[in-house]
Length: 152
Image (tube, rainbow, N blue to C red; front, top):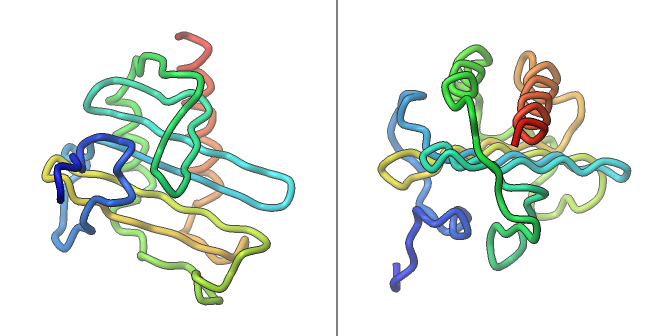
């Protein structure tokens, strides 16, 4: 890919999409974002390097943070959470509107990168259209990151 490393978290947007089934122990990176008019929740975790990005930002150039990273103290708990909510089985899209044309309102995305460099993407743009237990997952993931940031 023209000298670009898909393993660099900055380039996760450019990584090829996964075409095969993976297991949770192959997950090396997690990116989650949730946006609406009053809420922005972004989480970036480099599981392989035991780092949580502080206030990550996804732009056209890729993932970045102005505040650096902190240590991920409990990667095993995170993997168990992903298993508990069965995120590897989520559908790719939970959309009523074409993603490209839907700019306002609510949207979310969860990207999981695997050891082979590929990424499994899940996304939606409707608050009432999401995987089962989605709200519980988001709450638990957000609380997990807050706990890790408090410890770091």
